[in-house]
Length: 320
Ligand code: PMM
Image (cartoon, rainbow, N blue to C red; front, side, top):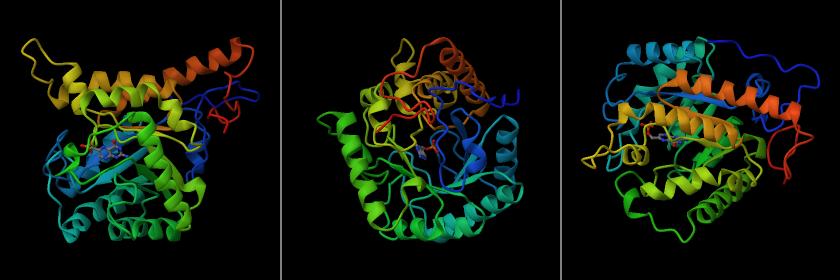
């Protein structure tokens, strides 16, 4: 892994997402899209089910992802696989807390992937610095209060229902406009509960209540979400819509583990579109991709007369 080149004085890194998110100062200076590596401590995730279920194996996997170039490790103890049932809260705590504590003690920036306020709060006490809530605060009315009280970064994903019903909630007039409006409503609720703006990261929730074809406009029009003025995280890794895209002649979707090259291609596109972070299972290719995009953007900034219309050159984010 080649270390990041430190942006020099006057470095024209227009278009690079350098947003300062609460408590993550050391990441803001990297001048490129961040890579979040997935550490699923579950027996049944669609993408890597069971592989890292034992805490020691999960910690070792997290460390390997750091070696591959991950900036953040996302530790989750409940599968969001379509159709999955809920995990009892004590079980979720037992799965994630030792892994969060061990990786945080190593000095890693750890995120906890949970929809439960109590899990979020205990994980932050164990060292997590990001709460990644695929329900955007809808699954647990106490989540916004915990996020406000702890002051940590909060990934607010677009969500319409738990895994057992999410595929029945896929109707949109215009998927991008609808997701944007529903995320805006979540942001209003978070701010009303005392969450600060600099804690919030938005996520379109690819694959969550989105039929295959609905995911592409969300990627293609990422700028419309960025216009809300918050950093954007993209989680496309190994998802079903990539499996359908890569289906063989028999029409069967490509299996999850064969979707990593397509995931890296999505990382490249998302980074070029200004994503703050990508969440991926196979880190190395995406870690390389975000560095390629940053170098490409710096060269564009050096050779073009100014920032693209509507962009704030200092942050690389849409001027709102
Ligand atoms: N996708 C999964 C789980 N957590 N979190 C965020 N913020 N965004 C996502 O798209 C997302 C997520 C799907 O399950 P996986 O852990 O097997 O990838």
